[in-house]
Length: 450
Image (cartoon, rainbow, N blue to C red):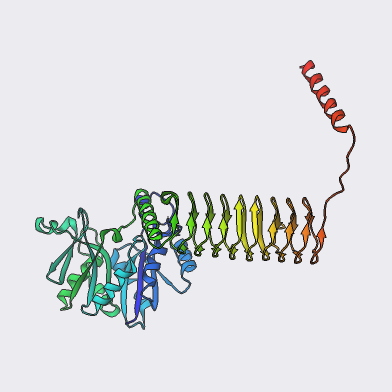
């Protein structure tokens, strides 16, 4: 059966006390809505529809960057969750399959849980995701009769017996697209808020002679983010889970509590991660690589046997081949280091190619930006770049060439050549002493007149 996702992302999130729409607040290096889209992607959806409202322009721009094929529809009036899902009706024209309703502020739903919902849908017209709450409190209760879901009762409307129910509503729902839209179109806003509630759909299904079932997941999967405190708790929960998974899959974390992962970090078995390492989005570290203490990586690929850090920064486009070395206070951006290349000290390598077994001396900079355009530096294999060399791009350094320390290289260097680009040293005997004596005399004179 084909699947379409409908992700609700229209809410303002007033309790966040922010100008930023709630679903754009960051969790593990990505906006909250990215986590919902990523979970839903496990179902290989034929269509992805995101319902926007508050801050729609910003949310739609973020969604386009995350999934260019996603369709955004706007809920211009905030008339409840049922009304929000109905806004997807036109975007579902011609679609024959199931709709999964997700929430842009509920980041921890597991793909396995969505798969179980899809399996259960084969035996029921409508499926709701529920959880056994430690403290049911304000959650809506799922009223069941054996395997059948009868209705969802909001806590404020529940009877004393219903309040004793610990099976609660997560908000996620799955049904055939035509069935869901028909059920929602028949809802009434006859309630205190005057809104159309998605939670009324199971009762409407029963009234129409259709079946509804519940899939139960762990309560932690249903965590919704409504406040800054909940966002911080969600970050802590994500990191705890990511650290545990890394250790379980054979990654060495020397200080797990100070290692921070992004939502899409991939680390191979037998990699070693030192203390105080932060992974931004888009990082892959292969097996047997080592990331030493106090490194920050984003949009980078680190191959087998490479060593990074301590105190190194890998920016987007950094590609480290096997057995490369990137050392302390080195920054790599949009650059490839071929096998065995070394950049060990105090250097910036940007918009560049560094050939195999090349050594980049301390203090080397690829001067890649002229104030308007970026330019590329290409360095061949087995090159020795002397310390404090400025490589003014665009420039090419041939295989097995050398640059003298302190050189400013503005022209291509042929293979095997030594490039020296600095003024000839001139020594002036006695001038240093005479110059300092003059300065000290001047200083003393100024003190005498003050």
